[in-house]
Amino acid sequence: MAKKRVRTLEVLTEKREHSFFGDVLKYFDHAAQFLEHDASLLEQIKYCNSVYRMRFPVKNDEGVIETVEAYRVEHSHHRQPTKGGIRFSFHVNQDEVMALAALMTYKCALVDVPFGGAKGGIKVSPRLASVGMLERITRRYTTELIKKNFIGPGIDVPAPDYGSGAREMAWMADTYATFHPTDLNSIACVTGKPISHGGIAGRTEATGLGVYYGVRHACTYKEDMDKLGLEVGLEGKSVAIQGMGNVGYWAAKFFHDGGAKIIAVSEWDGSIFNENGINPDDLLAYKKENNGILGFPGATDLGSPGAALEVECDILIPAALENQVN
Image (cartoon, rainbow, N blue to C red; front, side, top):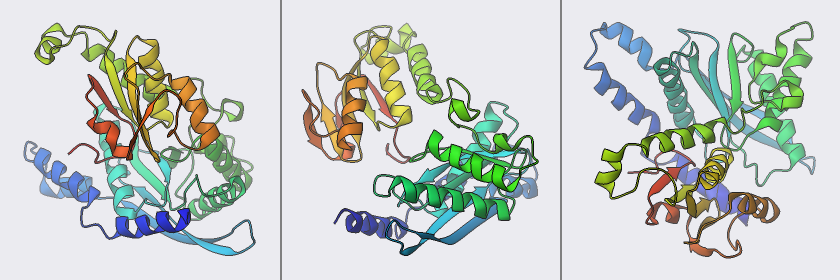
C-alpha cells in the first residue's frame, strides 16, 4: 500500500503545471536587466549545457527486472569540473534537476568557487528500497554516467543530496575506480565519501553548521532584533525545523548546543511539537529506530509534514525540499 501511495504522488508531481526551472529563468531574466552583457551571452548562461536523461534495468531482490529513470544535468561548462549532488527520490524529475543545476552554477559564482553547476537525480525511494537494491541502482547509474563522460575528476563531480549520503558516494567512487584502474585521481570523482574512503572530516555537518553560523550572526544585530521584538543572541530562542536529514539534524544540534530551544520538527511522516524543547540526538535515534518521528516521547504529533512551518517560533529553518515558503 505504501508503494502505491508514493507512486501515485510521483505521477501527480510529474503532471504539476508549476515549473521550478521556469522560476529560476524568471529570476535570471529579472537580474539580467541590470547587466550590460550581450543578449547572446546571457542566453548561453541561462540554459543548461547538457541534459542526460536515462533509463536502465535493475533486478530487484526477487529477481524481477525493474526500469529505473535517472538524470544528470550539467548547467554550465564555463568552469570545470561541474559540481552538484544527486537526489534519490520518487518525486525527482528533469525540471527539478535542471533548476538545481542552474542554482549550483550561480551559488559557485557568487562565492568565487571555480566550478560549473550540475545536479543529478534517481527515481527511487531510499525508505522503500533495500540496501542491496540501492547499491545496484547506484552502481548502474554510475556506469551510465561513465559511458557518456558525465563523471570524473576535472569533468563532473557528484556529491550527496536529498536521500543520498556517504554510503552512496563510496559505491560511486568504487564503481568509477573499477572502470579507471590506472587513474590516480579516481577517488576524486565524487565528494562526500566516508572518511575511511577518502572523505574529509567535517564535511557531513558543514551545511548545518553554515546555517547555524549565519543565523547566529544575524541575531547579533541589535537594531534588527529590536524590530522583531527579540533579544540579541540565540539563548532561549525558539526554533522550528522542517526536515531532519543531514542539514536539519546538524542545524538542530548546533542550535540546541548554542542555547536555542528546538520546539518543532517535521519529517516525511509528519510534524512534532514540544514547547519545552526537543533533544536532536534523542530524536535522531528515535527516527532511525522507528523510520519516522511521529510518536516521539514527550512531543505532540501535529500531523502533516508542513505543520512545522506554521508553528509560532523565533527562527524557522526550512531544511527539506524547495518551494516551501510562498
